Image (cartoon, rainbow, N blue to C red):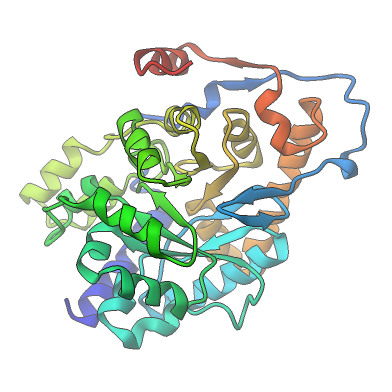
Length: 354
């Protein structure tokens, strides 16, 4: 794939994701069915609330990840640098988009480089599992080292690839590839879905091969099947299949609970839009909540200052919800009183999750 081709695809992804035109139509995250119980006598000051978290061996001042979105174009490079800088200031983690572009076209590497802008940010690299299989562990390790990543996300995206023109069609060997990377990379491996969530079977398989941290990237926010459907030619088979599978996936709340039950450290992403959503995910046992599209939109509307303001408000919201739930630390939300709605309960019951 030529640089103009892959760069155009990355630009298309940014534009469609930011527009909201590829949001799930009917399926929600089900985080709205996690109701934390209000405590009218919190007996603490909001400034005393602890928000620090540990994700994949990295310490954060707040339990938030700006999820990997982009890279591969000049615009994407500028966005990455701004968002990394905002994440560092806010004390949260930042992930780049798929480094497949820089692996295939080294001249695009600078669009993933953020260390000069954010030398201390917790930085998460990113590569697809199929590309990792093809590149081999040595090259994947180089990709992590080239951007000085603190952890490496290996993303799973079979549904998205099935809609994408020229996308991957052979997903054999994915588990063995992940296992090899877990055993050999110098940085922690985070296995990440791409908008469709992780099932109990996937969570169990990942746990068996030594994966400790996952990013569930569940259904309910941006549908990456829909993103590819929007990019497909009108009246094409890819467009029709994308329309059919637009709402395919496991809701974020369900996937979060599933992976926590399996004993995995969880970054809950997929449709989170607020500090309340992050707090709800933490109540289900997640270590952190991740957001992509809302941060991208804040940057689109206000640049670096807009992105930073959004993250600071997000962190303040998590702090407030933690106080109102009667907890002294956000990591204690998993023990806070709560009520789960009927649809979420039904999903978890059907999947055998308490």
